[in-house]
Length: 319
Image 1 (tube, rainbow, N blue to C red):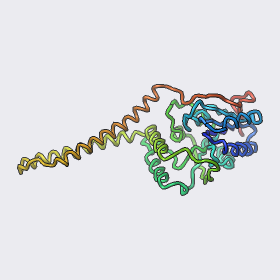
Image 2: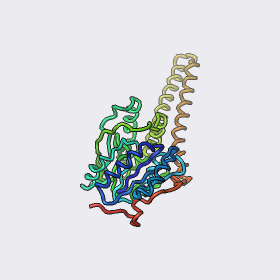
Image 3: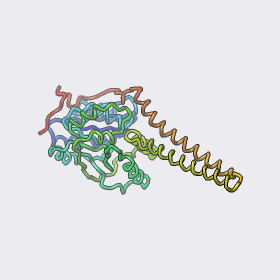
């Protein structure tokens, strides 16, 4: 089994999580690895794993060259994972290792991917609850792909799922969408996350909005279609109003009035045009980013070999 833990300035939480994770994994599988992906931490995380490297050869510590974002850190862990089963969980202790045995049991019964789903979001702000609900509604694509609502990155995956994810060429990655896109036999696992032990989340409201827009432009085209329909509807309304003004002038000879109305209409359409250009620009920017072909992440250094320590790069098979 491989466990992927992306982290950013989570040294206090990692001191608690890693021993707890080791204690759980020792009871489940004969061989395992814990892949900690450091996404540019500025705390004492590198020193912590430098000290742990000799004591725990099953730990592989990947240090990225800078902060590339959580999606890139997850991608780095997936690329490095060698296990027949791969688990992704956060470093903030809100994804308890104690749930891994239940998720592994579902895998033994033929489920390719077990993803954890929050039972409730009552502990979050109204802004985040409403925004999350709207986001998942908008992510329902026309091709039938559905991103599971309230599902995060805490999940257990069969090797086939991991190999499929490694085949995907995207550089601007939205992992929740990629997990849903690859398909396979998936099943939810409902849980209530505990409180964060140390620190605060780095996902602020603006960053969450940006993250959601990245997901929408990566997996849906409805914003472009919405703009087309809006433009068509406004054009019909404008044509009808213009015809009304001309006919009224012919029939009644009224002078054309409405300077204030004319200015308001011009400004309104100017705003619509600028918004449309912005949405189209987001899609063009994604194309530009993909065309450049830069790597998703760069590795600064690696400590430990994980499952590679025994020379078997394929990892163990599980009965």
